Amino acid sequence: MIKTFSADFWEDVKSFAREVLSLLPFSTHTFLLIFIIFAAIIARIPKIGLSITHDEAYTYLAFIRGSLFQTVSDYHLPNNHVFSSVLLNLVYHLGGKEIWVLRIMPLTVGVLMVPASYILGKRLYNPATGTLAALMVAFFPTLLQFSFLIRGYILVAFFTLLAFILGNELRRKKNRFSWLLLVIIFSLGFFTIPTMFFPFLILYFWLLFSAYIGDFGGSYTSKWDFLRYWLISGFSTAFLTTILYLPILLFSRDEFFANNSVIPVPWEILPDRMWGKFLNTWEVWTRAIPSWMIWAVVFGSIFAFFFHKKLANHRIPMQLAFIVGITTVILLKRPNSWPRIWSFSIAPLLIFASAGIVGAFRKLKIKKNPFEWVFIGLMSFLAFIYTAQLIPNLPGYFAGKSNTQAIADFLDEELRTDDLILINTTSAPILEYEMLIRNETENYFDRKKTYGRIFLVVQEWNGENLDTMLEKFAEPYRFDLDTLQGLRSYGNYHLYEVFPLQ
Image 1 (cartoon, one colour):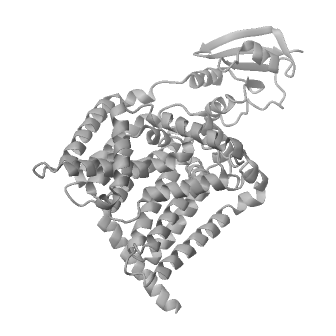
Image 2 (cartoon, one colour; image 1 turned 90 degrees about the vertical axis):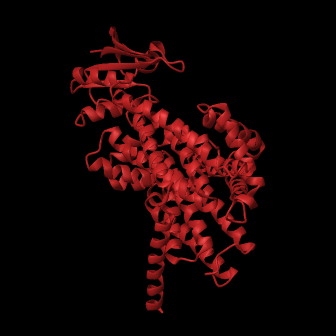
Image 3 (spheres, rainbow, N blue to C red; image 1 turned 90 degrees about the horizontal axis):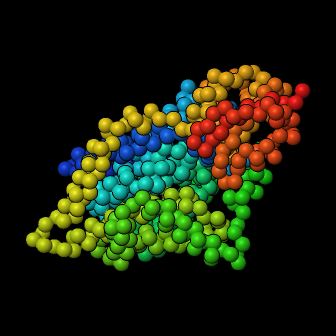
């Protein structure tokens, strides 16, 4: 029996390899897709030169630069997107301590979303849909942003595409190796951020609905044969995810289950909270997009849903599974749904919109002209113009310094071993990161050490100024206010020197 299973599994591996090759665009669309991928790279390169953000800095300090065991076992804050942190921890310990080096990982994942979107769009609908979706994913502002942050959101978005591609192929044809890959992809997604529960439920609802109406391949001997794999893979995902989280469950269990991100929103405010978060998400997603593009995407999404039977290669609209899956999670978990939580859905939604736009152009049928490809060509030309303008300016994106970097450069020249840096807790991680990459041997932020001089950093923001900082720090750290003097100002950052009372 084991020998027979091994032989069947090996045949499934070879079949999977053949399927992967069949998904690659060896056609006239190949060069266009290569250009879109190249343009996606160019559009993302300027982002990796930006100064580190607060969440990135905290992730770096708390979860990346320590030991690998600390990374997989510490969940004192949900900033630890564990699988992402594991990858970045490995990069860090191989010598990649600069933020731009660490950002190569999310940038690579963000670029890989482009061909993944093409493949999913092509398999669910047609090559034109896949090409237009790839173009949209390449330049969608929110995806551009997550493609440079050393956080796990872009990984979850990428895993969502891979899972949907595999799920669609498994609906069409039984393959044990592909079912195993689906389990691994979802488990790694959960290991990154638990919000992977959204795409997990969406896909499994879609596969369940497809099985119910008999929309699955003939390689399954019956509906029960399909549902058997569906059920086993779901439980296997839960089991493997639990194994991956064992260190956290053993050493950070209370923090994992009690952090603010998983505390349910009270029922009485849930409708208002969800509507407010929807409007917030819409504003974040659309703020940098021209109005005509927004309405084209909205129109395409509606058109794709109502004309699904004529546009798609599958019978159950995946949009329906989105509605059911997301509603189920909201009712079960009542999450505080920040815009970043929904980033997993951007690429699939753009695929649906692309299908509707392509379908609408095909409805025109004027002398059989391929208007959808004319539109895609026009969008590609606009992408070419944008990319051509970016390329000459790429070196400039790495030349500038942020205010925090300027302060760190100044302090690096001035600091002595017994100096202490005081800064508001909310602003501290960024400056601490900047000081750390300049001098790893000294900890100037240790407030328990003996100190002979204090550098006070004031960021005039959100009500903070010199008076509020003196009120907070002067007495506990024994400021001799007669020695207080301003040293430098960088934007809204102001640097002061003060000595403790003797």
